[in-house]
Image 1 (cartoon, rainbow, N blue to C red):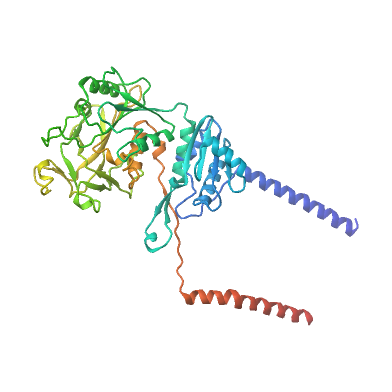
Image 2: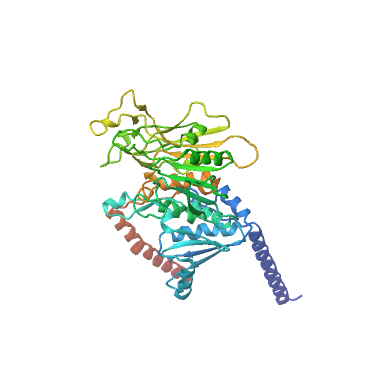
Amino acid sequence: MNPRSAFRLTLAASVVVGLGILVLVNWLGARHYRRLDWTGSGLYSLSERTEKVLAELKAPVTVTVFMTEGTPMFAETQELLRRYKAKSPLLTVETLDPTRNRARAEALVKEFGVTGASVVFQSGEKKKYVGTEALAELDYSRARFGGEPSIKSFKGEQEFTSAILSVTQTRAPKVVFTTGHGERKTDERSREGFWALAETLRRDNCTVETWGSLGAPEVPAGTDLVVVAGPRSAFTEPEAAALVRYLDGGGRLLLFLDVELSPGGTRSFLDLGLSPVLSAWGVKLGNDIVIDPKSAVPLMGADTFFASTFRPHPVTKLLEGTAVVFSLARSVGLAEKLPEGRTGTVLAETTSDGWGETDLARLEVKVEKDEKDVQGPVPVAVALETSGAGEGKRARLVVFGDADFASNGGLPNAANSYLASGAANWTMEREALVSIPPKSTDQVAVTMTRGDIGRITLVAVVVLPLLAVALGVGIYFKRRR
């Protein structure tokens, strides 16, 4: 074989071997796909809960990203959704830039009803919208000095997994709000209304209805959660008995109980008629107003305070390092010995300096802690459930000593929305919607003086080009020899 033929044969064999190696590498890459997360906080690493949800998908889920490249959280959203897509073939992702594909964007805006930058999850007829404002918790400390707000934590995984669970549920949970006792209205958008909480439940694909309990023998069939939102008059004995039977049958109840005084200026607390429900579960509703001067909100009275002490519980899992603002709350505690078959946890409480003021006449004169008051730390929220492992679903009950924190005016404050929605989801056994915590972002800052900037500029603009010229001249003269 002449040298030329041998060269051609060797070249052909090398090309074939190279192509074979390339095909093998691609095949192995497809079979063992893996993306590495180099962020310090594991910003893009999916939790076991998310991986389980994606592995158990039974129906296709379409994700449409309505963002431009300049939208805040665009890069983080894109990278995270790539991780989701890699875990399930049933998940498809489309990024739609309204500035580049205006016609399709307008068509989808009409279909989905999108009004701003958001991520839309859809499976069948069910949709869930996640706005960019829900993807991050911002730190505004720099804004006070003219800087831009920085991202304190990224909540993308929490919101996206919650959305997938919402649109793939086989049945939409039914939530009913009681009426007929002066409760907060779910269609009222004033500060006192409960429209925002009801809308949050609807966005989680719950069916929200109202129920006039007076005269009704039983809770409506198929109800997954009954909400009593700040009643101002008493429930009758038959109404309370219906709620007791509902819980005994594995029902779920969420109570927001405000400070309500008896009419006539007697300065005594109104009996809300819910004692049969509370006593059956070992819940103690205090006739007091909770005060906490150490945690009082500035420019507000001592009865408006923030609670930052939370007991370990699925409801409070996302509240670590945050606070919830309560206003004119009453104490809600647990009996020393709960009724058989019940387990309970205090969710939130004041500092040890707080107390429950029992002498209402002194509120307008001077508020001081004395031995007659409920001593701190004072609990303001409790969660209970049946502890037996018998047939049927577990009954669950959450009681708050305040309704203002979950109202339209209260939800935007601090972590109020986390506590209210977390309590609703836990009572309906949708822990997956509250079990993924936000992840801190890597905020790396480099501080340089004018001298540092000057030296870097000198090296980049002068020194490096001169070195390149010198190297070229040196090589030229070396070859001339």
